[in-house]
Amino acid sequence: MKNKVLIVALTVLLVIGIVSCSMDEYAKLGEAMGKMGNNVYGIEPNMQQVNETTKEFDNKVTKNEAGDVEVELVDPADLISSVAEIKNSTKKTEELKKQLDEPLAKDEETAKKVQESLRTKMENIISDTKVEDDVLASADDKVKSAYDSVTNALNDIKDSISENPTKADLAAVSIVNDLANTVKNIAENPDQYNKADGELDTEKIIEDANKALQALDALKVTSTAADLDILKDFNLASLFSSSGSGSKALSDDSSSPKDEDAMRKFMFSAIDSFTKMVSVDGEFDEVKYNRFIFQMRAIRTAYETTAWLVTPSLAKGEDQFAVVDAIIDGKNIIGLDSFSANDLVLYAASVVFTECNKLPVKDGSELSFKDAVKAYMEKDASVLEDEDLAKRFENFEKFFNDVDLSKKDYDVEHLEHSAVTAVNTAAVILVDSGFDLKIIEKAGFKPEDGKSYGEELEKAFENLKNELGKNN
Image (cartoon, rainbow, N blue to C red; front, side, top):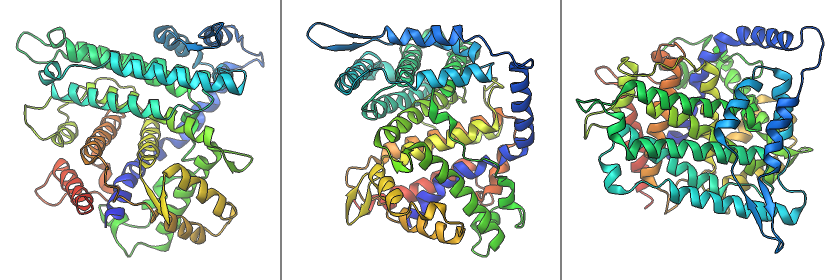
């Protein structure tokens, strides 16, 4: 039961990415037009700005006579500004990613010291961005939620810094530090963000949300993890083509073979893309895995910080699941008009992979998710090439059934906050994309008569907590 609840919770986020399929052809046309526009006469673009941007990173790693290594953060405002210009050129963006993927260190010994220095830097960021409990108590609930999301992320990011950090990793730390300071400033200075009647000043909050959005754009350009291609040429609409609408589409056990085959294709589109990004020459690479999780955590943080800042403010004591209903009903202050349906897919992936990375896995003995991914790739490398989708899906299901939620020290409250934040962020992205949020009914999530989406979500996560509680 607990595994089924978890799988449903994670899958809903991915499956509601169906809205992006309606934009597939437009996206392909836009990409083609963009490439023509960047190089319409076959003239190679000037890479001076790219080179100047990445050169700044070379000056941020210093070594003293004793051999100690110090890493300084890059100026996030300058980086974000440069990326905003570079991203308008496909070739410049590709070159920027290529250069930022270079390691900060030139040798293995220095690389280890760079990792230690970056972790120390993260510890300092965590300390410097801490808001005292009595100050946080008077902050707006959504600001508290944004603060909780950022602080949780800082610890995750510190723990997932790879053994050989790249310039892109330093960019991510610098940008996330800026996000954390933005949220801290809002939490510590409520008077600057409130009107005379005590209500939050929408315009000021939107201004900071736009800063977070710019940070997100920079992370998407500088992080290789953002290149994860889940959809490829797969049309998610095929999942619903032969079954009706509403919850029956995915939850009915009598779904057709055509539906099941479409789901298998989608699942393995995601799995194949992921395994390629964490492997070298077909073999699992721990450094690339850690870097992938690290960058996905930074991307997720930027999405969630932006989303919390533009959600409705709840009355004191009101259940946080109510925020989802407020977004659905249009009682929000979004006003960004900056997200696309593709953002939903990337955000969903960032949630799935970062949350799974925290799960214990049983395989005779307790393993981390990273160890399980490695074992799966080693055991089933040939299966990934198998054209028999039924066989591949069966093997994957056997693997995923080994996920074990019975670990004694699993933080249930953190799980609930992550779940609420994920659903809230997905809702903001969908609404800001111009779609009716009730499209999630097509993904099999339809409230019972008389109940709201928030109430249904609350019930689902109460069931999950009860399952976890049985093991504690």
